[in-house]
Length: 154
Image (cartoon, rainbow, N blue to C red; front, top):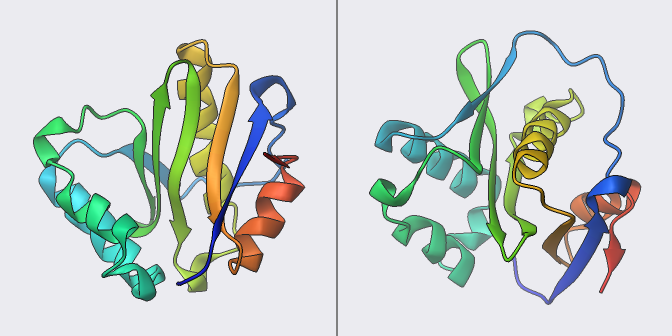
């Protein structure tokens, strides 16, 4: 996906995730092993095929798996099948959403919300007050979602 990226921010106290009946069959796993990370990469390149040769795609591909500590990188599973992911981080008490994706067939089922709820708990546990993300200006669906969550453009 080409285009420019805009940065958005929200205070943790204002991050109100949608109230949904999320299926109990959706599980969120911290990625701690190479096999899980490879599943995440497969999802990433399946959901964002235009990113394969992009700087963002290369960043993910080149992340040393042994540096994964199990917090901040999540895989969503439905009936043991990987259907979504979230890659996050914390820098100077600011939480960052680096990548989030859900397989198209499984969208609008609360999977992104479940991933973000897990992230919100991670941020609360680490006393983080702000969350930021960058979104491609051409990615209308994600732009709509983060605006729905009350993120504001910086």
